[in-house]
Length: 65
Image (cartoon, rainbow, N blue to C red; front, side, top):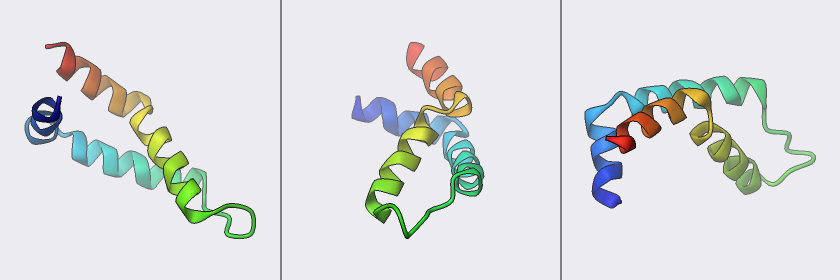
């Protein structure tokens, strides 16, 4: 699985899409320092990014091959 993940990042534009989705989600869901821990915010943000339709489309199609 580690080799598959490395190939996903090397052979597709996953890193670019991941960065774009993360930037968009940071705008849509900004960190609220008064009500949440930053570590929890990053975990939530990371989960939203990898489950986004854009990232899922790339990873699902790549890993199915």
